[in-house]
Length: 273
Length: 191
Image 1 (cartoon, rainbow over the protein chains, first blue to last red):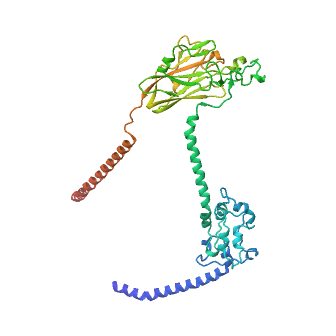
Image 2: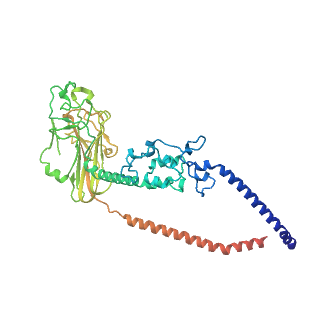
Image 3: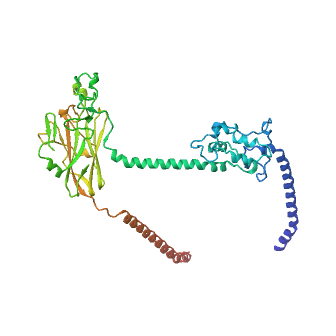
C-alpha cells in the first residue's frame, strides 16, 4: 500500500510543479494587468485626501502633483477649509512654537494648498518647516481623511505633535492654576464661613418716622424691618449686636464667672446666661 | 471660637438666638410659619470642631439662615449632646426656665414658637427667643486599629486565606490521584 502511494506522489510531483508554474504565470499576468490598470489610476494616486491604504502601492513614492493639476476638470481636489477655521485654536499664542507668524504675513491659502500648489521641484519640507497647521486644522483634516503623502512626510500626527506641545504646556499651567485656586479656596473657606447667606441687613440705629407705610424711603433697611419674615438680619441691636452671628457657645467655667447678673436684655424681658 | 481647654468632660452651652426681623406694623403678614431650628454637631473628633446652627421657616426670605461656632482644644476631643438639655427661652417661657425642645433639634430640626402654635414665630424685638443646648466635651477615643495596623491586618488575613485555599487545593489534588484509579478498578470489577 505504501509503494503505490509513493509512486503516485512521484508521478504527481511534476504535475504539481506544472500547476504551480501555471498559477504563478497567471498571477504574473494578473499582476501585469493590475499594474497596467494602476498606471491608469495615477490621478487617483495623486489624490492626497485618500488614505494610503486605498492606494495601490503605498511603498512607492507617489507622484507629486503639478502646479496646475488641481484645476483640471474631473480630477480629485483636496478639501480646503476657511483660513480662520484652519489656523485658529484656543490657547495658541504668538509664542507657541512655529505658529508665531502674524496673520498678515501668512499666505492667503491654507497649508494643504501651500503644499499642493508647490511646483514639483520645490522642497515641500521647507514649506512645512516654515508654516505648520494648528491642531485644530490637523483635526479637521484628519476627520476628513486628509493624508499628506507628498514627499512621504508631513503626516497630520507629526504636525500635531509638533504643535500640540505648547498647548499641552498651557493646559498644564491652567491645571496648576486651578489646583492652586482650589486649595486656596479649600483652605480659606472654612475661615471665611461664619454666617450664611449674605442677606440685606436692617440697621437698628436707623430710625424711621412711620413703619406702617412701607413705601416711605426712610423705612428701607431701617429699624422697621423687612416686609416679609426674615430671621436674624438686624445689626446694631442693643440686645445682641449683629444678629447674623446668632450662634455662640460658652463653657460652664466661663459661664459661672459671668453669671453675676443678666447679660441678655431684650426689650421688656431678660434672659439669664 | 471657644477654647474648651483640656477635654475633661466639662459642659459647654451652645446658644442660638432667634429674631424675626419683619416689620411687625404690617400685622399677620410678618409672622413666620414653620419656624424651625437645627444644630449640626460634628461627629468626628479633633482639636478643632465646628457646629452649625440653622434657622428656617416656610415663608422667610432668605431661608434658612446659618451660623457657625468653632471649638478648639489643645488635644483631640469630641462633642456629645447632653440629653434633655435643649430648651427654648421666650418671653413667655422664661419664667419656667424655658420649654424643653425635642432632641431632633440635632437631626432634622424642631419647630419653635413664640405664640404657642408650633412653628409660628411673630416679629418684634420683644418676641425674640434663645435656644440653648448643652454639650459635653469628651476626650477623643483612641483610634484602634490605626490605619497602618488595619492595612497590615487585612493583608495578613488575605495572605492566610490564600495560603489556606492553596493548601486545600493541593490536598484535593493529591487525594484525587490515588482514588481515581481505585474507583476505575472497582468499577471494572463490578462490571
